[in-house]
Amino acid sequence: MSKSNRAFVARCFAVAGLIIVAVFCRGVARGAGSDFLAEFLKFVSTFIYIGMLTAWGFSVARRVVQKQTRRLLTFAAVAGVFLLAATEFVSLFLLNVTAAKILFYLCCAAALAVPTAALLTAFCVGKPDGYRLPKSAYLICIPAALIAAFVATNDLHGLVFTELPLRGADEAAYGAGFYAVAGWAAVCMLAALIITLVKSGKRKKGKYLWLPLPVAISATYIILYAIGAPFLRGNFADAAMFLCLAFAAFFESCLHYGMIRSNALYGDMLRAAQDISVRLVDVNYEELCASVDVDPMSRGEMMTAFERPVRVRGGKTLYSAPVGGGYAFWTEDAKTPDVSFEEGGADR
Picture 1 (cartoon, one colour):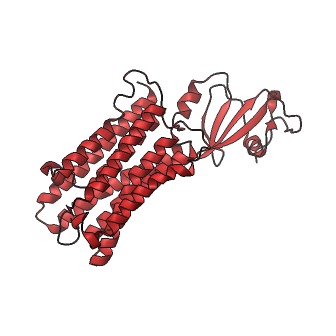
Picture 2 (cartoon, helix red, strand yellow):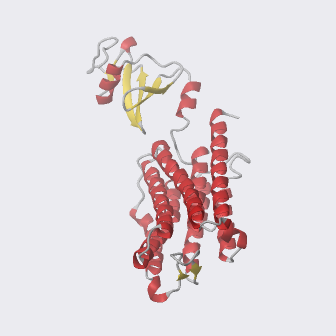
Picture 3 (cartoon, helix red, strand yellow):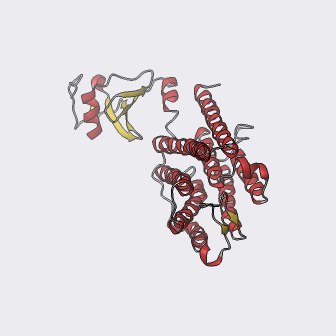
């Protein structure tokens, strides 16, 4: 097993452990004799989920190379964090019924944003770094907006929620309109899966076999939750939390398997490469990783090369390009006659 695969498996076990702890807290809270202890354990459970989603959002912002994809995934992570945090705020602290209703409906709108972002992200798979979605792609936001408006006006028709999980009600009671929300989430996630797999082309046998697993589990969950399975309603009662985790798991799998370009494997790639001279540095020009045969590069040379290609020792030319979290520098044998730099230029 490669180093990157071992790290990926370790992250999976760590996430699974945190989820088990969160579920355990929820289970203990249900039987807690003290209201304070029950609310505290629920808060701990939600805090774990928020922490995982926040960490994933920051990680995506640093790893994903394609700008449009990075923005969509980061937006979905922010929407998910808002969704989980606002839901917990409503249940614990907000006493004004009108304000609680407004915030609860905003949470539902955020829940619709997550699967919609998943579908838009799927359109970006395999595209170049500077790709931008055509305006026509955003037409899929219209159904999401209409469903969100339908949810926001629930007080007028009562077709989505017949009871809200505010003070005095442990869980929401759903009407027929709730299935429009669940259906949109399921359709977007399944469409994102299909588009991603089709655009990714031929795959090595078995390598991507478990990629659909997060979506399959999510679809199964929606069905069981809709029919009122007691185990789910008792231990995994937060559908929004489950949707956010399924979203993150699916696209993290896409990142790991290379369907979405990331810089996570640059270090392994450079360390294994020979006969090339590449160095990755952070914004302070401190080395992060470099190829085996990298040429010497002083800080002054790198700072100058960031402005323009510069000739360095050995008659080579030093080039640069910005990357997530820093810069990449490499040397080539090509000449740049209009630019000069003293051999072994002094650091600045």
